Image (cartoon, rainbow, N blue to C red):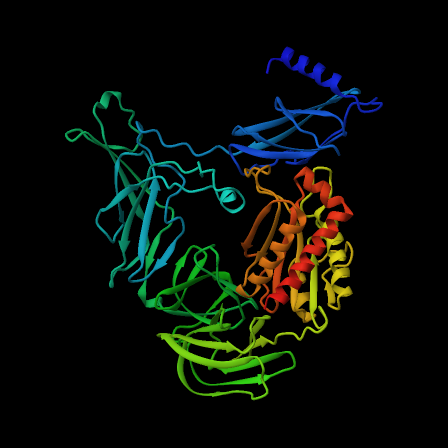
Length: 618
Ligand SMILES: [Zn+2]
């Protein structure tokens, strides 16, 4: 905007300010983004903070609405590189200016069609790999679109064909999770070439390089820019360029299979190197067959067609000849304890396990990897009120399954651990809830502290408002007879991992973690805000749904969704765990609501009523 135009607008804006005596220029406070922030979106993002109430505000030549308490929130276009938000706030006392400098990433540009080059990113394999017969190597690189390409593994294969794949039409993740599924991911250019090779029995190689070749047909060599190292076939008018993958290939069957053992008390086995969870919290001493490697990640063969991955540093590599991690399951017994029933499964060694839950009728499914059935005896405790029947099945070689059918209509949590080589599976008995909530133990976790959590435009800290809502919920629950524990009662610091532990140690039936939300860069806060509720284990879904339903109808703010989400506070399985994001603290209207006692009470009441509704539903 031209400066004289801006001056006229400023004068017009200044004359509209009428609120009271104003002697000083407005204060300008930006909460987000902080100076120097690396923004994770390339095209637009939000900025929020506050100015003196009654001021007018312009950011990067756009007039921005200021909430009556002075809060502002804007969703503005960005430009890649060093980017500056220029804020100008004005009132009768004068004009204040502020700048916030951030870094905006450059989107990846497509490789020009008239070039011949390979890109440094997206080359695969990116890490050294140890592979075995039957594994498939997927080699890929990015380069000039519209060429032909091939690859070979040095010392192992001839030239193998590669194909250029079309650009995936995928949605940007922040938009997919929090948004309206509208913005496409614009960061993926064309020119991805891929090729495959399946390792054959007898293939052997140590640190073999994967070599790519990109070939382009040209019309006129005089007008073509030849990259250095390029080869040229003048007869066929073909230019070629070689490159290689960073990761090397080793196939050395004599070291496979290798038996490994978990070092730590609690290891997560993942679906791929650095990917999501496959097996939750496996204890120290559990053994696996390892048969491959990708960089620092070791591939664990759970069954014929099921692989898991763990970091090499989490494993002890056992000497050659160590027996396979296998055990027969000969007999099982149930034992009633005070508020749970124990299932004892004696094993020869510690095997990995996985638990699933199904409903109507409720059944808990335990899979034991390395388990072989020889099961002729299951002894039931006659006094037990939890378990109706246990059925075993050998699903496939090395996968033993137990289906535990419950007498009660719902799950109230379970626990699983080893004592020696004996596997203990505990199933929680349904609590006897007498008058209203008497008999129920509930743990409330006011999210964050010592760190502030998200911060609103006028500086409201999430940890403060989370505690306010938690205390009000505690009052409602106790008034109706529930026994309530809190992970914190004031502003003391409690680590995120301590919180579920406290709930479990106090034998709570329900854990409610209270939070207030913010968004990742690049998602529009004006169309995505409101209340949301999260669960992880199937047993907690119906409670989460009941709480979300009640909050949506009580709070009169948008429904931002009921989510399955892998959070530390939704992961405990010993009890029902639900996390609530009451409102969006970064959104001025909702930050203002969160400051009010009335709205805090509504949040607490919605959660409370959601719990009551869940109990009534059955
Ligand atoms: Zn939070």
